[in-house]
Amino acid sequence: MRIITWNVNGIRANLGKNALDWAFAQEPDFLCLQEVKAREEQLNEEQRAMLKLPFVWNAAQRPGYSGVTTFFKQQPDEIVTGMGADTFDVEGRVIQTLWAGCRLFNIYFPNGTRGHHRVEYKLAFYAHLLDLCDALHEKGESLIITGDFNTAHMPIDLKNPKQNEKTSGFLPEERVWVQKFLDHGFVDAYRRLYPEKVEYTWWTYRMDARKRGVGWRLDYFLVSENLMPFVKDVIIHDKVMGSDHCPVELVLESHP
Image (cartoon, rainbow, N blue to C red; front, side, top):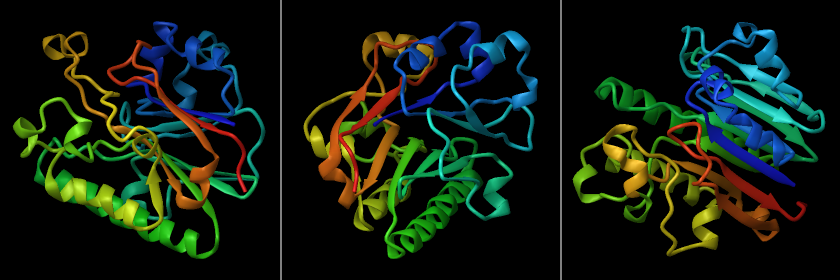
């Protein structure tokens, strides 16, 4: 079982660079895209022909903004768009797919950089999601949350932690929410496997940041603790171009 997550920063631009060819060539079981910035009907015939797997699409109401798409090899047992809260669901940030008793969340978490009110919105989003996950864990479900979390959890997860202590994406109040998920039955699969490894998944387009290795790890796989024994690897494909983020892949041996 292979799951790839990738914030493509505009699916039409990404398709224009043939960047998604790499992702489909991997033949993943699930491909989770964030920040697609388009409605499905906005794709032309040529662009549609480049999508090599069936998919579910959740676009934001606001044009050219946010949006997530999940591609799958086999039809999931259940598909849910959103997380049952209009405040967040209007922004097209969540797709849930259920397969073989495991629920996969493809999520584009809010970005807090446009002002303090967006930080509050972002924290409320984390809180609502955690309540939902707590309830699903209580029901005995195994969960995988993947996508662009828009938060670096620990100093090791970004190049310049000291300089960014007051920057949204590394604010203490944002980081504590990532920790809350880990305190509520989730594991950051990459960091559990590679406690000391320094790799990033996002680089600003400014100042040749990617070339200079000045990045942040913002794209995660959080898995329920009971799934961790089945995680074979988490691979950050930082050489794959096409977006300001790179793809990240979860390899599962099997699952209970």
